Every structure is written in C-alpha cells, then in structure tokens.
Amino acid sequence: MRALVLATLFSLTAAAAAFAADMTAPVKVVMDITAGNWAESEGEAEYRDLFDEAQLGRLYSRDFVEKYRAAAKFPAYDEGTSPFDYDVIAGGQDGCPLKDVTIEQKGQEGAATEVDATFKNRTCFGDDAEYQQAATVKFMVVEESGKPVIDDILTQGGDDAAYGSLKDTMAEIARLGQGG
Image (cartoon, rainbow, N blue to C red; front, side):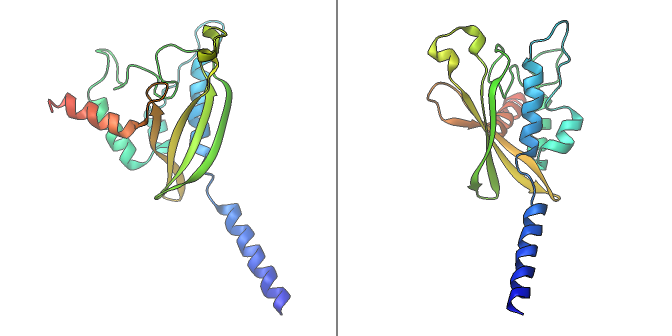
C-alpha cells in the first residue's frame, strides 16, 4: 500500500512538472526574431517586428501590451509606428549579428520569473575587449491564461548602468507624448 501511494505521488509530481509552463518559450521567440533581424544575409533581409499585432497577442502580457499601445500613439519617426528609434533588445541602432546567445531561467521575482538572454552583438566592430563583451537582457515572464508571456524587458543603459524597465520607458513615452 505504501509503495502504491509513493508511486502515485511520484507520477503526479512528474505529470505536474511535465505540464509546467516553459517560462523561456516567449524569450526564445523574441531572441530568434532579434537574431534574424541582425543576421548577415545577401540581399534584403526580411525584418520582423517584435511588437506587431501577432507578436503582441502571443508573447506579451496584457499590461505590457497596454503600455506599448499607449506609447505607439507617439511613434519615434513621422512615417513609423514604433515608439522606439532603436532595437530594444540589441540596445541600439547599430550592431552585428548576434553571437553566443544563451537563454537561462533564473529565479522568481514576485509573480514573475526572470529569464536572462545573454549575447554578443558588437564583435564585428573590432577585436577590442569592449566589442567582445556580452550583453544581458532580463525578461520578466508571467503566466496569463495558462501560458507564459513577457511582462517586462529590463535592459542596461551603459557599461555599469542599472537595468531599466521597458514598461517604464513606454509609460514615459506616452506621458511625454500627451504633453505630460
């Protein structure tokens, strides 16, 4: 009887683990898109928007989408639709194909799971140490409607600068755009 109870508990635990959401899944999609956007290619490469309607509907939390849509009312360029004038993942307008991309699930921070993406994106600028350093982008992933979604993206502004929230940046863009 005791063996049956232990076997049942073990199988339930294994089943629960098998059904647990892969919190790295939306980050992998974002990093695949970003890597594709920066890849070297012959001819005109197809750029994929990280924040088009399809991506907004499947990769990001409702709160993130709300803040993005509010900021997008104030595009960075006259002919554009994005509130950003730079690649928010690569951290700039200039860069190189991404190298040594790793994605690692970290610990919990409140209701969110931190998932870090680390990569090199300046190696084509030269062999100096500054161009060989890896960048880390922190994704805060939550579960909504039974699936993992990105609730915030934290990036570093400079060499030793603290990480800043993309949701805070979007809220600031919307505030300033409204004359605030």
